[in-house]
Image 1 (cartoon, rainbow, N blue to C red):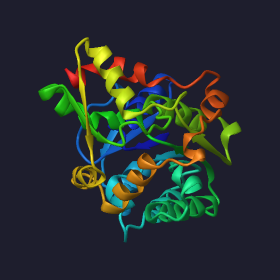
Image 2 (image 1 turned 90 degrees about the vertical axis):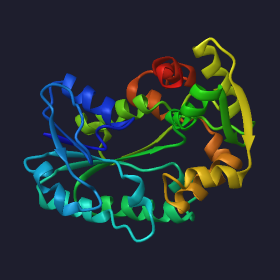
Image 3 (image 1 turned 60 degrees about the vertical axis):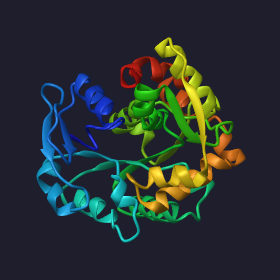
Length: 279
């Protein structure tokens, strides 16, 4: 059995579906009750309370570990989740990390994630680590303003990074959970091209078939909006990357192609599948 945490989110939902369609027994874990594919067991649990994962982990062989936002905050101890997995008999863990542990290893949240990676490596479990850059689905932050005003409000309008489709992350995660060839590997996951918020706005407008205006935010304005839904440390680390990406953060990684045998999907593909959110 495979346990998927964050199973109702942008990565966990397609991952759960892929695993179920491949014939695997799957337990989907989320904080709230939600619909899951036929044949998938659903368990409500909070990763901030690792002992509460015991019912979900019972009988599991593999775990996909995606941390909720509060587990990135100072004082959180997500390493306990790996301890619970090992104690429960889990053999393999695929961890969703972040590209920032390589490109900006001294950021507050990056230090914590690197420590979690180290804990996993030293756990005695089989492991794979996924390090995505920016997510295409972060554009959903703009959905409400696009619906109401046909406006995208974002900082750093002409600074881009190669954002990745969460469905591609899910596909790589499924490969790592199902194929021993990926054990002991860390993959850097990006989209196929650097794309700026202004160009993302153009892609949303094209999908809608109507104009969408881009409004530039200051860093402080963006930080105030982001900290309503994530720890301040994570917001600051994210804005550092979005405002001044390093050459390593601008690099298009070959790892999606290597694992899946196809290139990563462009941002326009993600928008086309999710355009209803912006209507």
